[in-house]
Image (cartoon, rainbow, N blue to C red):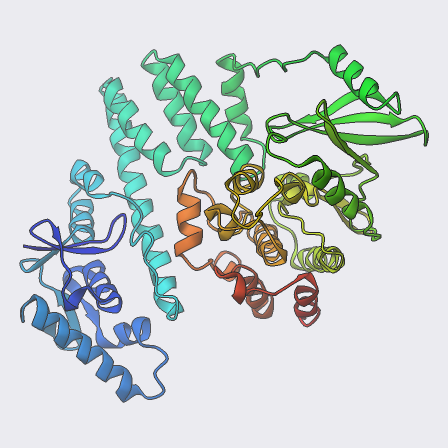
Length: 526
C-alpha cells in the first residue's frame, strides 16, 4: 500500500518503507501533496500550474511539464493513482492514502481522537520549493489551517477530559498543545492549570519555568504577566547569586583600584551582569558589564580587550561607545555610558508594532549604525531589540562584538569553543542560520540577517519563524524561506518587503554584503 505522509514532513512510503521511485522527485511529491490536501473534490489543472509551474515563458511549456509529471507519477504508482473528472485531478485514496486527507475527513466527522493522532507535526514541515513562491504561500496557508484545526480539536478533547474529571487525559492533551506551541502563554498556562488540578505542582513548576526561560532566550522578551503570576503562586524564586552584593562591590573596587565605585545592579543574565557604577576619575555615572566566569572560560584575554576597544574607536552617535575594557584571571569587564530612555524591546512590548514611517526611520538609523561599524571592521553578532536604545532623534545600539570578543585564540572559523560561544550568546529568534548551525562566527552578513529579524518584528509584531521553540527554529531557518512581512501586514510597501527578503535570505551570499549596501537599498525605499 502506498501512503503519502504530509504532517510532520513530506514522504511517500510503500508498505511502510520509504519509496524511492520516479514519483519521489521533489516537484512530483509537491504535486501529490496538493492533490492530497484537496481531498475528494480534487484540484484543477490551472491551480496546479499556478502553484508549481508559474514561471515557464509559454503556457504550453507549463502544461507539458504538468502532463509529464502526471505521466511519470501514474507510470510509477499505477494508472489509477490520480483520477480525472473534467479539469479536476484527485488522488485515489484506494491506491495512495494520505494522512492529510484522513485528518480532514476525521475532523469533518468529529472523530477527534483519530484526527489528533494523525497530526504528527506541521504540514510539509521542512519541505520547500525555493523557486515557486506561490507554492510556499499555499503551504503556509494550509499549514496554518491544519494547525488551527488540530489545536481546536485537542482543546476540545482537553475540555471534555476536564468535564469528566479525567485528569490524566487532561494533562496529556494540554501537554500536546504546549509541546506544539511552547512560546504560546495561553497553552502553557492551560498545562500548568492541568498539572495543578492533578496535584502535580512540581510538573507545573517545570512547565512554567521552561516557558519563562524560552521566552527570555528565544524572543528576548518578558513572559506574559499571567505566567509571572503563576510563577509567584508556585513560589518560583530565582537562585541566589554566588556572591552577595557586598562581596561584588568589594571585588569591583579592588580589581579596578577604586576607579569604579559600585552603586547598584542594573541587570543579570547568563553572560553579563551589568552594574551602575561611578567613574571616580571622570566623575560620571557609567555602566560596567562583568562577564561571567563560564563565558570567559575559553576566551583570550588580549583578544577580549582588543576587540572591545575597537568598538570604542567607532565615533558615531548611533554606536554606544566602549569607554574601557579589561580582563584578568580575576575578572573581565567593559564599560559603557549608562542606558537612557526605552529600548526597542520596551517599545514593542507596549505597542507590538511600529507605524510604517517609524519602522522605516528605525531601519535607516540601524543600517547607518551597521554601515559605520562594518567600515571599522566591527561586527555586532547579537543584534536584537534589547540592544537598540530609542532616543528622541534616532537610535543608539549597544552590545557590539561580544561574541567576537569572547572567541578563543586559534582557528576562529572552525573552533568548537568559539562556535559554542556564538550560539550561547545570540538569541535564536534573531540569529542567522549560519550562527545557529555552528558554521562560523558572525560577519557583516550575519548582522544583516539579524537586522531583517528586528525590522520584521517591528512591522509584524513577531520575528520571522516565531513563535516556535527549541530545535525547531533552527530547522525552519535552515529549510524554509523567510515569510513575507506583507502576509502579516499588507500595508507594508512592496519595496520594503523586498529589502527584508534579501536581508533574510538563507544563504549569506544572497544577502546585502554589509551595512553600507543595506543602507543604500533602504535609501531607495519610498
